[in-house]
Amino acid sequence: MKRAGIVGGLGPESTVDYYQSFIHMYQENVSSNKVLPELFINSINMYNIFHYISENQMDELVNYVGGAAQKLEEIGADFVIIAANTPHIVFDEVREQVNVPMISIVEATYAKADERGLQNVGLLGTKFTMEHDFFKKPFLASDKKIVVPTEHEQAFLHEKIVDELENGIVKQDTKDAFLKIINRMIGEENLDGLILGCTELPMILNKDDVDVALLDTMEIHVDKMVEQVFE
Picture (cartoon, rainbow, N blue to C red):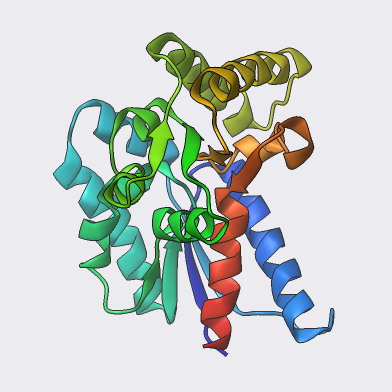
């Protein structure tokens, strides 16, 4: 059995969801709740991630996340994932620092969008995910359209993600405000899909809330993890 390595803590709430989802999805694949996968979690500090990106200290970011991945490899992980979207801004550089396979949440999400035939998707996440182009690149390279909220909406989404969702706080008025932004984007941009590009967003949004295809990046990522275990 291949052992998974998870760089977690980015944030803690979604790391718990990653763990539980991976266990459940694995057991569904083996058709037994009496078999468990083996895995390691290296939980690091998400606020360091935000600081490095805000200060444009990308070398420090690579070293911090890369060091976490290396530790997982050293203790026996057969493959590694970063349990968050934002740190994927340096995914390619981190992947070069380990010798075991790494599974990209961006690559996995693009593959799912392509599989479903989506051509015009919206992207929600932290301001770093929405501002930078690391998530947009594979879509644009294939002539797919990917759009983000307005600058003001991005600031609002980021604040609520960091101050509330990252701390396990879910408020109905925040959800209502998120849906107002989403419905504006769907109507004005004629979206056929929406990417939840922050692994905390499924805490507050689900497929029943919108009338377009919803891509839950954590769910997609965990599915790829389970595939990797059985390869």
